[in-house]
Structures are given as structure tokens and as C-alpha cells.
Length: 113
Image 1: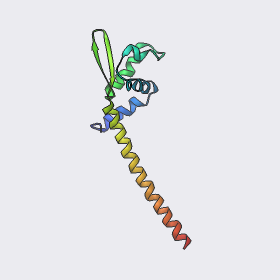
Image 2 (image 1 turned 135 degrees about the vertical axis):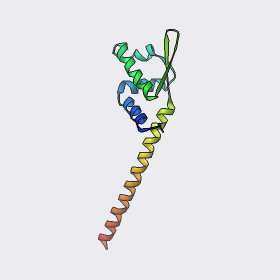
Image 3 (image 1 turned 180 degrees about the horizontal axis):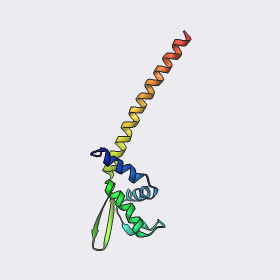
């Protein structure tokens, strides 16, 4: 899991935006240059770079510069950590709902008697 709640907050904040989700989805196919990533979006490059900055600050994306070309790459470990948090929350709530279901069934069987 991310080291603290702030890290997890940053991941979910980054994933909250459809542009950033689309960039991350593209990067799951492999590394890409900033210009290639920006092509599908109708926005100025500085605006697009702000989206990349959020993704980098969250740890979902890293970039490296070679000459004049900046290449970005997805960091699946960070996404996996968020997935693990979600899975844990799902398990907690499923357990609670199972206990509620069992309790309600016991009330129903008591009423029938």
C-alpha cells in the first residue's frame, strides 16, 4: 500500500480525472513520449503537462528526458497498491453485509416460530 493516506489520496485524486485515466490507460500499453500522449486531447500542451505532473506526483507515472524528448511510463506498482486498498475495503464491507444478512435471516426465522 502507499506509505500513508496522503499518498493514497494523491493516487485517487489523479485517477479522478478522465484525461489522466486515459493517459494512464495508454501507458499500460507501454512507454510513450509526451507529444504522443498529448495528441488525442484538445488542450494546450501546458495544460496537458499539468495532468502529467499530477500523475507523476501520485507515483502512477514516471518520466525521463533524453535530449529534447520526454518519455513517460506507467508505474503499475502504485496502481496495484490502490487496488489492494480497494480490495481490502470491499472485503470489510462484504463481511459486514454478510453479518447483517445472517442477522436479518435469524430475525425472520424467529418471527416464523
